[in-house]
Image 1 (cartoon, rainbow, N blue to C red):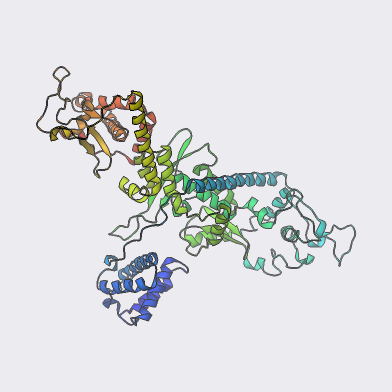
Image 2 (cartoon, one colour; image 1 turned 90 degrees about the horizontal axis):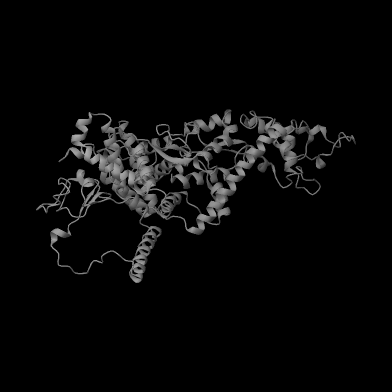
Length: 614
């Protein structure tokens, strides 16, 4: 029989160092040791014993850590249960603590957003500039051929030889020289090449005979240029050091951070989604768009639903429209990222980075601090250290940025600037309903203030119109002697009761089945014929239910082309003509376009049998 210690040790050995699963395994091992349960059989560890483990975590860990560890341990034990380790019940059914409320759903303030936009613009403009300088260096730069023994030294005091301390070059030639070893340097640089005596080892002291090739010679010259007896190496860029020059060829972590932040801010995608963008496949083809727009895509795995039958997390595809002409759009930034990292995307070091994540990363960088490495920024690489990047970003911004704030920030900007209707935002966010968007992102102070501002504008407008005599509406008295029947207003909503499909002003006096001469006749029962609303004078259309009108119009237009005219006329003609008139005469045609776009993305909102239900 298997003991809990054997199970815990097996889980520990199967997890990656520094990963969340490894930390959870350690916490479970500690619990077993402290409580003397190492020798307890797995068959004796069930739901109640797992609750005792959670209670132990309560006294040892924070609320967030308790939740993360308990969920991870339950999942890991569930895997062992499938591998024939017998527990009394399936661990996947065991209870876990309630997920703590997230603390990162507050949008950035106006001041923080201004600083962030300046940061993004600065580093993206710099990235475009560096790429142009690199291209120019390949065509106009002269590769240096000098090695250490070509300079004056005590062993060879030839006065005709140039002194190393006075040797000068320029930025273009230096870039061309450092790139001349490509793809061996840096892509295929081995550990032996970087050791003392190796091909790309840079000696600590100025040993001329150790500078065996032009690349190490230039690298050594850049490393000693700030010594008092030496002159700056590059006449047109005297303040740049080796690390700065390499960023013209390969992106540094600040450049990658700026691109990632910009994509997160435009698309409202979380950082792990952006890091999963496939550099070879990031355009969403099923929605071809002519002109200035294109749909980009990325897979979403974190937070995706788990199939209860297979226990496999179902991957979803996130999509978002992006401009082709704006050089700072997400689409063009992905293209820039692919171009800037293309020189790192081959060789043994890149193959190692790909193997670590079992995929092709978009965000890759070159590090030279502790040896030459190509590092991928990807969710599957659990041991990645983001501390240095976060510190540099924080230093430039002047405040600590949580990339998860960019999602509610984008939603806030869309709401404030009226860029996208709610239904399209819900679709692009990947939420199953608008209730999730509202509950998670629209309950903070920023959105409350937006609603207060809108109300204040409307109240001020009413006040002014009353004051100048232009008010033409009717003020509702506080008390009215009106029958309950006349106070009823029919609002047809979607299945969640969130969005109005149609609004009826007087459901007791429908006139859709009467001629103009006869007029509406009071009915003892309220009308519930939603499919007749658009041909009834009691119906009202607002921008909230325009998406459903457009949705219905597109569906009926498709039906019109697929069945006989006589059949269509007898069933759908009146509804089709009414919907067509609304769509063509609606004063805000951008709302019509947005509704058509949403229909292209998600299909029809309304059930196709809606007009057959009489």
